[in-house]
Length: 306
Image 1 (cartoon, one colour):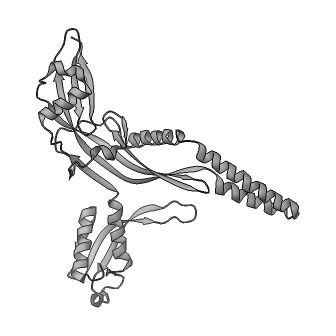
Image 2 (cartoon, rainbow, N blue to C red; image 1 turned 90 degrees about the vertical axis):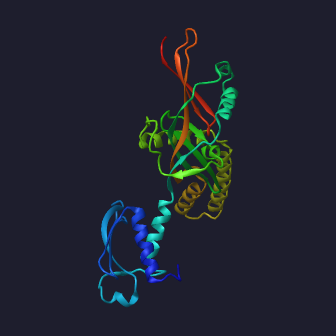
Image 3 (cartoon, rainbow, N blue to C red; image 1 turned 180 degrees about the vertical axis):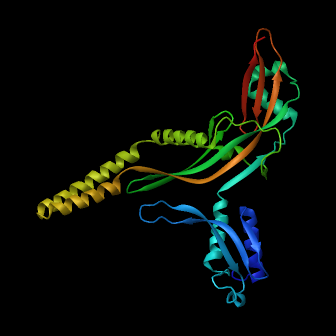
């Protein structure tokens, strides 16, 4: 960035505004007006808030004197770094669609392995190819006492069915993705984003509860040992008991087990689904078979009674 010319910096800012969907107006060769949303930091007990602002930006030091109140955007300036940080934050979110390149024979082979009873129905009728939205969320769980252990948890939530797949990102492997949603064939989601995150948080709670409790027990043992030493020190020297209480509280806070959850990034991913209409068999109901190749899953749903 240090070697960029004023023209290159201005082009970068304009491209960033376009990517962010922010409005802007080129007043003349030197002055650019940008409509952006900025975060106002908290004041006293008020929470932070978002506010629309108009930025007057110039990019050439020689021209800045002609525009009092305008910000000079050059390599190393606060405002240029602010735009760069904004782009990095946007990188925490992605929207991608995936295409399955396997052949019909490979699909039937996978179905025969997952559901051997289907082999008697082969060859199956040609499937309808649809796409299903999945919410991919990567979290870091921080288990904190006087020691710290962090764990990356990658979860994928089926927005149509509500099931959660652990280690979801690994299931995608080296699959090729394209940006943006598909234009047609999207199965409707049955969960809002708020409901989806609530389900993921419930799942994370179960992950924490299922963890080996030794990390808590070992921290308690270290805390009790430290507290005993502290108590003996103040008893033997007959020091101020109020100071002992203060330091004991500090020890408690140091060893207190807690789990912090940090969201790393989020993706709305569209995965292919092959839908087969299975023929009726005797008294069985007519059924639809959904095959999700990336997750290697089969779903069979009855559609009506014969």
